[in-house]
Image (cartoon, rainbow, N blue to C red; front, side, top):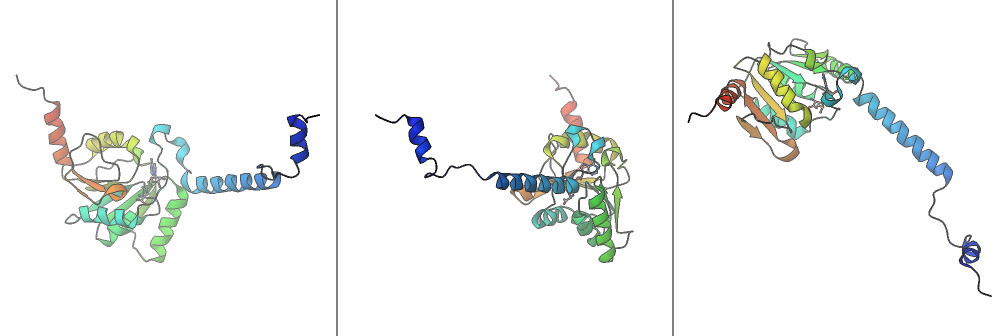
Length: 217
Ligand SMILES: C[S@@+](CC[C@H](N)C(=O)[O-])C[C@H]1O[C@@H](n2cnc3c(N)ncnc32)[C@H](O)[C@@H]1O
């Protein structure tokens, strides 16, 4: 009599290994991934609860090339600089080394603490580099004539509106990786993910005014 397929499979079940991982292995992998996620969110998310979902931007540090591209676009400039979402402070340190009075606004207290201690141990005086634990959306930026921002594509339009309201005509804005939609670039540096874009606020204002004018028939 021919065996049914169930009987055959039962007979061979000890011979062929199944693909299922051992339950202890699965449990350990799950625990490890949960731990890694917890660690990641500890560094990237504190302070975010009060920020509306569409304006949330996680931490991602600028690469060396991106930082160099920002500094290239700042050549010939001086004065006060604000980095919006300063992370571990790398753009602020680079700008302060180039002579800017730099302020980093950062919502993540761990990153602010790290940047402040780095300023301490590297001997950067507070008149050159300051790190403020503050939501930049709730900060008046009118006293800064240089602004840098490495954020996210979804926030650039709203950020553009804020900067146009607050910055003076002589201000320069540098956007890292994600350009402002509808703003004419003055120049850019680098390529791909490290590309940075410079915008002269008076040029942006004139351009937007001319765009808003109805065409003469
Ligand atoms: C993409 S990272 C850029 C970090 C840094 N500027 C750099 O170039 O390495 C964006 C940073 O913005 C911070 N951030 C996001 N929203 C913020 C807000 N409303 N106010 C202050 N910091 C904010 C995040 O915590 C994160 O550290």
